[in-house]
Length: 163
Image (tube, rainbow, N blue to C red; front, side):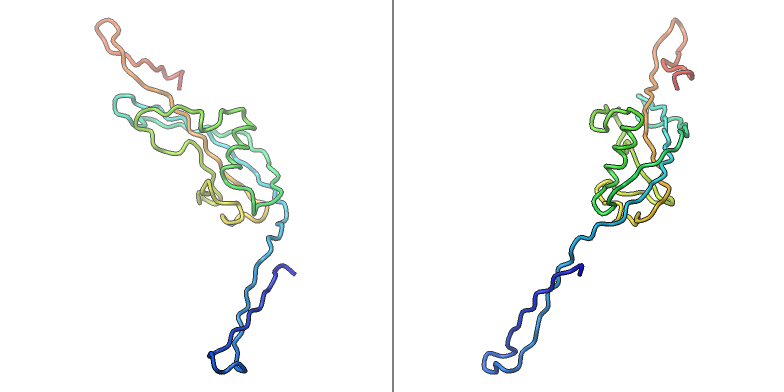
């Protein structure tokens, strides 16, 4: 019922047409999976980014209120689509509109199930998410840290309150 089979028969040898072997080719139909409810536990990871050292100097993680997302078909819904839904829920700009600071090479977002990151291009089904589950998502925010001269002393141009 979930597959179509085509049988092809070929002779074993060109002279003996009575002895045959069969090759059966089956094509699996894409069966629609049952909808799943994902409990999203969103996080915002704020990195104080040193413009001089081109690296993160301090990281803080904020825990946001969890919410649920209904996914109609995990076989066609990707991790990238899930992360986009989270960004849409919070009103964050899409990842392709964010500006990278020099030296920042990491992905802006990630999604994890049971501590394992879900690759953006893979469907939830391929990642093993086929039933209701909890997903932790992380959105990275860079806070630029630079230095400026103020009188005779050096002072950070980014206050702790900005972070």
